Length: 441
Figure 1 (cartoon, rainbow, N blue to C red):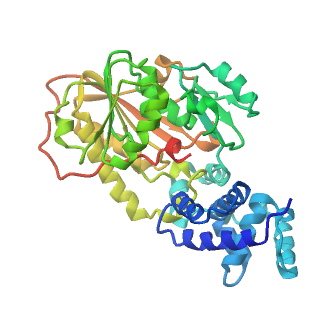
Figure 2 (figure 1 turned 90 degrees about the vertical axis):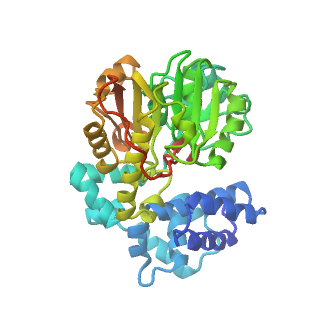
Figure 3 (figure 1 turned 135 degrees about the vertical axis):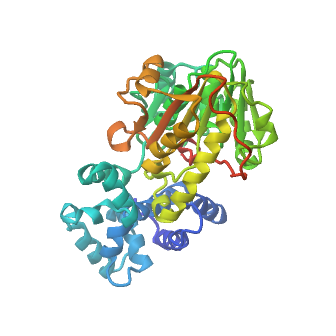
């Protein structure tokens, strides 16, 4: 069935606004759909997929669109990519011929840099870090839509029963390879009306994010902090791993994000989670817990380059100077969070970034300035948690290798009371969310 011709106009209108890059694409789309309630589910889906197709393929779509790269032509290319030419109605003869010409182009013959569809500065960073061949593999996967991952709430259900119940919907779900509670769905069905979702038996969460929560190793009865909790995807996973015992603090500087956690908590059945709004990483609420916490997760605010399958606009909105500012914030947040950890306790630093300066660079800097912490080799942590991943000293989950979003993690352990005395308070740096895949999904 063809879409009404007017849908192209709607897609062109919202695409024009999104390509100004003044706000995240998903926020702009949500606002547009709210302002246009007469658009049906099929129409909204087509418009959204068109927009994301353009964002993923902007470099060579702009070239294909020709001189001037009109918004109408970009919209046509996005729609053709997302739903196919045969589903488009209301095309002129010239537009039909234009799409036919584009369809005949062999994209594999494009220069590697253009095929990657990345800003030059980001492509060069990836090549310096991964090499050109692996950058091409990574970019190819980043330019495809991500699957939908779910986490089974172990307090309310088990994975096999959830698979069977989803099948009656009918929704085909397969177990994820690394998370024992993960399920993967290739399509994106509406979940919010399913009894499983309403009852809190499932949550949307990328498998890599589930693995991060498990790395913390939180146990029954412990005191645990999720330092940059955001909307709480990892918080809920950690609370379930603690079997709803102990005390789990969800810190964030955004009251709005923590507000989104509350209905999710209610569905999950967790009562050990305590959301706390903080002003910054040296808030008095944080200081009161210094040296008392068994385990702290810092899922730091980052560039979000590991989430480009879900948020392709990030690569066009982010700038190199923004990365430098981000690393200063990450180092300050990690330093502030480290003060919470008791002797013998563990601290996990994580990002959804693919860039070394936000990952290994922060780890090296932290170890150099915190002699009271040791790096726990990731292969040891993975063995403890029975996660079937082969890693060295840190976790590096990559979309083209592991099928997840891009994630990094390092685990530290505080070793003695003497080394690394606390520093004087530094100027406050706002802590934040880590572009959470589970909240964005």
